[in-house]
Length: 232
Image (cartoon, rainbow, N blue to C red; front, side, top):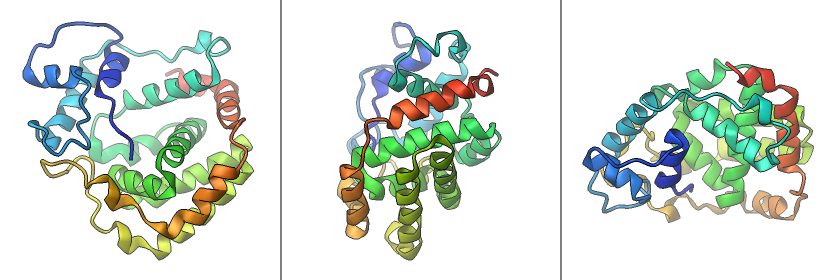
């Protein structure tokens, strides 16, 4: 599961240092992991609502079109995450916001977050976290990743992720208790061990052993080819 780096999120949104103006800002700026901290004094729903308020009051963001050739492949892929995060105005509308973007934007963003999830915690983490974010629309998001990997030229990842969706559909009962990220109980997400399942072990091992050297290079090249789509 992703561990929310709150301090990095703050810096990414504001791009500057300033003093907190209320207890929630102070807590956010400490860089405390809100997602997995079961003793958090701030209810999860209140924290998520505050993130939206923070994003709404942040300075305008412009995708760095003029800098795309100077940014590293991984930094350019991260810019896509920042670009999309500014568009989230309602946590329970993430899917609708996602599919309202041009197809190349959908592909680049979803492929980036898919690779991050698999690299961090395997396919079981991918399905757990995306179920929390997208609810019943999660399989459609995975299908966007499958389509995107094909367009980007990452055929092995495309095939593996396609297989993972079939495995998920046969084992949906394992994810029936996943709560939406915008409607979590005060203690936050379920403990990390609850998202572990061995049904994806074979695919996880395939991912570990596959050629990952050019993944971000290919995603970044795809972004550069379609950079105008991000400049709204």
